Image (tube, rainbow, N blue to C red; front, side, top):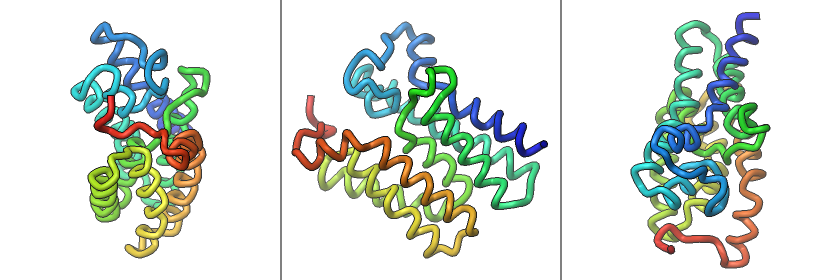
Length: 195
């Protein structure tokens, strides 16, 4: 019962739409009505500037990190940590506050694995930055990082539940990026230095 309640709280925390909350605090327009319509940091930065995007990134990362970190203080099981992380992640993807229409999950996944596998996430960060530097596509960097994290959790001998979590989250992130994948293959995806 305790883990069920904790997972519900993790889901509700994950469901908090950071960019929309920030928009209300700073009297900004709802980013769902502009750009790609996504509530994540990339669209937030594109619409309201880098500082707004950075705050969105921080908030979305903390939504993943804090529930899992709190879980590690109470429980002592990688399986339970993975369940809590998945609950927070699903909250971001399918937030109850936005009629289950959420973001793509990359920043929240980053926060979850920052807590569960910090060494892995440091390598992932390097991969992400390298892909952005070479090709200037945030979506491609996100997809590359998502595709490689199961391999890295395996290579770094993470617990089996954490490896399984990385696989499930990678699949969900790819599913959320289907439109980006189509634009990448057609050459119409926005680069980070484009208007």
